[in-house]
Image 1 (cartoon, helix red, strand yellow):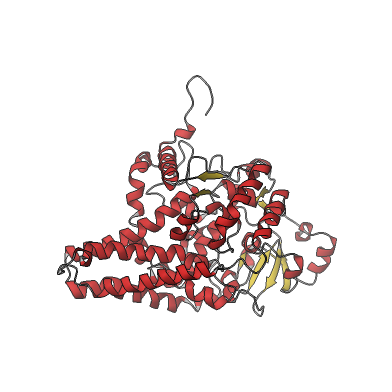
Image 2 (cartoon, rainbow, N blue to C red; image 1 turned 135 degrees about the vertical axis):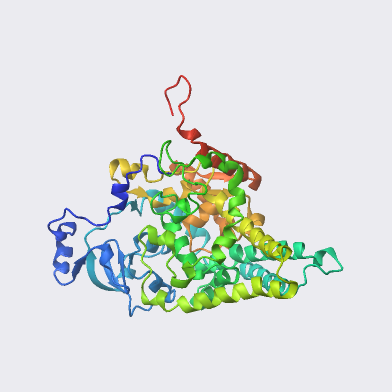
Amino acid sequence: MPPNADTSILRNRIATNVKDPTAFLDGNDADAATQSSLRSIKGLKGTEIAIDGVIYDIADFVHPGGEVIKFFGGNDVTVQYKMIHHHHAGKQLEKMKMVGKVVDYEAEYKFDTPFEREIKSEVFKIVRRGREFGTTGYFFRAFCYIAFFFFMQYTFSTSTFFTYNNWYESGVFVAIVFGVAQAFIGLNVQHDANHGAASKKPWVNDLLGFGTDLIGSCKWNWMAQHWTHHAYTNHSEKDPDSFSSEPVFAFNDYPLGHPKRKWIHKFQGVYFIFALGLYWVSTIFNPQVIDLRQRGAQFVGIKMENDFIVKRRKFAIALRAMYIYLNLYCPIANNGFSAATVGIIMLMGVSEALALSFLFTLSHNFVKSDRDPMSAYKETGESICWFKSQVETSSTYGGAISGYFTGGLNFQVEHHLFPRMSSAWYPYIAPKVREVCKKHGVRYVYYPWIWQNVVSTFTYMHRAGTGAHWEMEPLSGKA
């Protein structure tokens, strides 16, 4: 992803060489600015957001999608706003109170391109406005996964792992099945909900979104990282998912000699899958649940100090304590503290981690993935089409049946184009998305079978680790 990355451009969030801040504004905006404040992005208050360089106070704004908007207070949310409000025009922003302008806003992405307009036009002929939320089928599947989860949660928390009459009562079997049951919640329930896509009613999304905490993660930390990932997919400086595994292994295809490239990465094509299995441990005991400052999002400049987040810290801690009680304390209390009991608990965690993290890994780490979507911006300073970058950094595999088990995450291209559309609709829009991409010359990667995506991912991880992409071809002079 980071070939020829110019971090001075990507990190330069504050314009230090501007003598007159109003130089960023046109005539009308400059007049308005005399009655409002001019600040840097870092100067935003906890009740303020910035969109296209304009600062809005959201303290008293009644958002149709619920209070989740306040989660983003204190940040520039231009990309996040546009990626989930496909139907909005300027008039929607007029409903919020404008209080100033930022002087250091740089538009890395551009919207309203011909490709974006056509793909939205065609998709919205299939999924009409207001119907993009969960279908009856979606809620039926969600109910089944939730019921399955609570059954397995009760079983795991109350079982005696080593005294049983049937093989399906054994600790090993119960641990594996419970791990998969948790993964189903992560894939099929909380994911749509925390994207605001499960229901038009905010409270339904909020309630189902707590499925994240039921499986050992944290709703608010997940949103901080995942929404940032969606906004800046495969952006080597702003996508937390692109560097969250470092230095153990690297998703980014760093140039040879890059300081982030480690000798052990040469073998990551073999061991990265085992490292993913430890994701559960690193999540359960992650102290970030205490302050709700997701370090990946924080590293790229997202502030998480607003009142909305601060007030929810105690709930996040309580939910994590509940998970630890049910899934660590109870099994030990029922079976005794021993290596065997700890092993059963770890098997449960590894099963969940692999089922979740490996499927997410397939989505953006494959042979034809665009690992440097910002290259044109870094070379020319010209903004790139956000919609195009989402397609070329993602892959889709399988069809509707795969979607029933993965929560539609197999339709990763469609999901990244329309993140606030329920996964139930992706099988219906996928053919049209592929058609429009072909028309506009946008590379759409599709694998008919999941095993093909798996092979491509292992191949990519090996090449990224060894730097094979950067080695010279013999006698050709080409890299």
